[in-house]
Image (tube, rainbow over all chains, first blue to last red):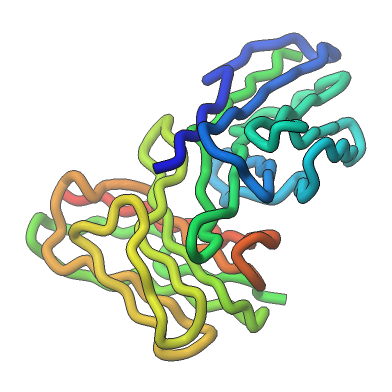
Length: 111
Length: 112
């Protein structure tokens, strides 16, 4: 089956710092999705990427779909305390395009 | 808009008991999913459905059953609860498989 690796597993940063996290796969993907999960809540979609090389921004967030279609990164600029949470990459593929998640990156922001 | 609604929010079960986790969505989405999330871990797909009357296994289906008799509802059944099923369960839905999935608030289940 497809291998989806997300790193880092956790990050501890100071408020105002920039953050970068990434996902790599053993297979070619058609879609990369980035979700955020706040404590005690379900995940919420941040950014969706559908084309190789696509670079998309959403406020302080920027994500890119790798040109090889096997990786994606998410950057957060000028972090703030409410950025705390778990960030997941996800892909949609397989025979029924079911949604599969990476293991997540736990982000802690120190004020 | 209600979106995706899960009930109950919390439940404690004894080993061997059975229960059904309810999930309903009012967005007329074709795809529905059940995930479990263990502490400090990611989301693992249990079952999913691409439309009414169609269900398929995900990564960790053992010990669970599902049905999809209507577009709106996708209940998850635990027949013989085991401590290994202690987890937070999330239901989600999407228009298609590669579009945005909307999640419910989760059901926190403890099996003792």
